[in-house]
Length: 130
Image 1 (tube, rainbow, N blue to C red):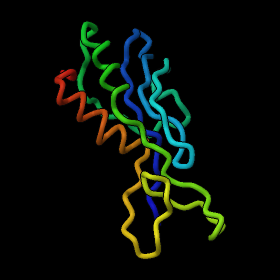
Image 2: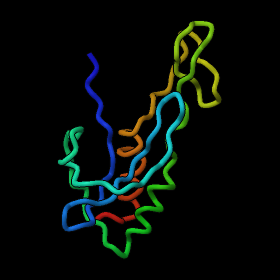
Image 3: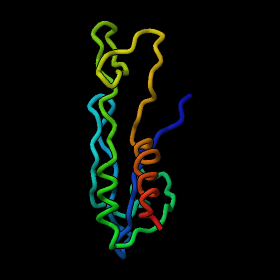
């Protein structure tokens, strides 16, 4: 049975009340995703909160660079569409073509992969996190 998936974000606490800015991708596998930053309350106050991990701190003087790096990471593109031949929504290749039976498929990229494999490594490589 598949493990549950949770929406994964990067939260930067910036206020005394523990609120801050959420950096994440939104959308879906059928529509594609886009990068978004928005204000957010303390994560633990959300009904959907699961867990958090401290990645480090960002100096106020480096925050603009932090935002730029997050925005530069490619958001997951459209990865599924409806196939009228099978009457199912199926994974597609980057060029939009359907996979043939037995053809190796690339792994689907969702918010967790964008956060853990693109955004965080880019921030670490730029030495933005302390």
